[in-house]
Picture 1 (cartoon, rainbow, N blue to C red):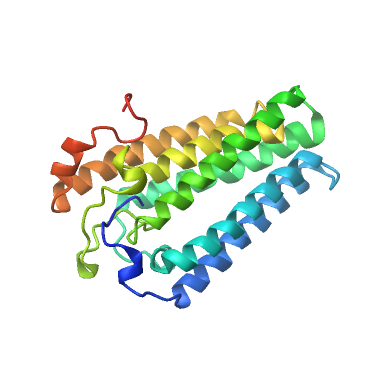
Picture 2: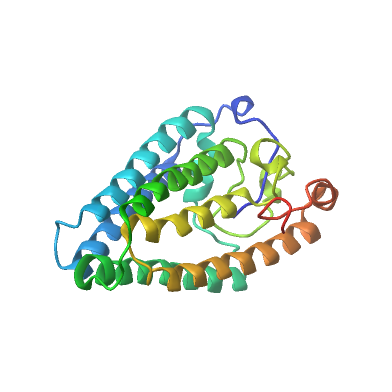
Length: 241
């Protein structure tokens, strides 16, 4: 998912195609699904923090669409393509991550929306909002610098796949995963559910495994990646790993 390019999007003059349209529809359908899971498990539509979360998510995705469609629509097309050569282990990881994400929404609804198992101060709800927004900004920044930001782990040799070292790739080798994990950590605080951290932490562990496997794949299969890895030493967190 974090495979990379250093070719500026502006020079390729790409336009949105049917795969890109499919991706946009899918993303907003996912938001709708999250809403259904949150409110159905909560048993009510008056859960204010669920509306706050969905509102932030929707607003950021709209901004993302506007920015990326103007600067790098090819990455939207790529993320909408059906993964035909996805590695077997990656398919398993994606299924596990998807299941954990959906389970986290249901658990948050049962906890914070219905039964009130968790008690969370207002300041934590509010403090998590800029953290989530910051994570989404990193996602936008990453997409601006990577035409090959696919949903699958694969080296796209047919598209002239090369290594990136610009934007967030100057600091970590997999900034998309970094931002997604940061956003995942903020979500339970916005919704007000400590119990949601159980599937969230498990999903982060899955992301770490995927990062390690993907990084190994890129070092073995993508020309120039080993040299890049010597320059940018950290995969996810600067100074840590």
